[in-house]
Length: 186
Ligand code: ADP
Ligand code: MG
Image 1 (cartoon, rainbow, N blue to C red):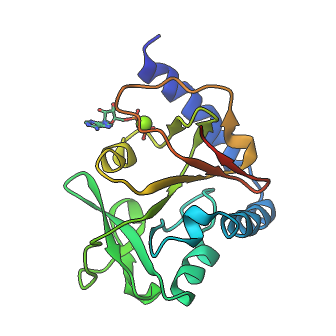
Image 2: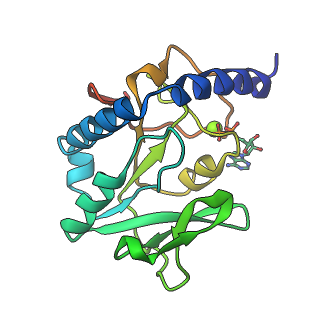
Image 3: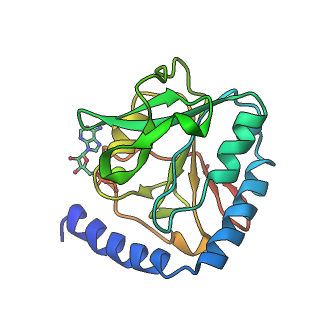
């Protein structure tokens, strides 16, 4: 079986599992992940933080985004431009509008991020070797291949799997933050 076919099967299974999370558990897990993130110096020492506007059963980043803004740090959110993911500085959440895939994106008035210290990444599945499974479009792999930012996967513990088939283009993440712990990838 090719890596792509194996990834597709694992992605389907893990998305079904993630989508089965109740709204209550999602809220509780998201709040715990926020608290764990606040213990992570790669996050707390960063001034320019790339986050994402949550969709579906993804970890809800609302509190994290507000936290970043309240601390007068730069909140960076993504926009898909010519099939690439680009990050823009979002001074407040009113500077967002519906964009690609019905996801809230920075308005045109937002400035492009000049510097990114840390990037919080939505995750379908991840292994403790640092291989991350996304939605299968490779947006984050393309972006992560050209940044020195610390890469932090936000995920439910149940989305961590023993191993994930990987391609040479898959960029390893540095940290996994779950509702239970901060895991540093060695
Ligand atoms: P995901 O990381 O979203 O789970 P994949 O890792 O399977 O998805 O990547 C999906 C596709 O994105 C790949 O088949 C590949 O064509 C493309 N891709 C990913 N990274 C790159 C890259 N650095 N350069 C060119 N194409 C890439
Ligand atoms: Mg990938």
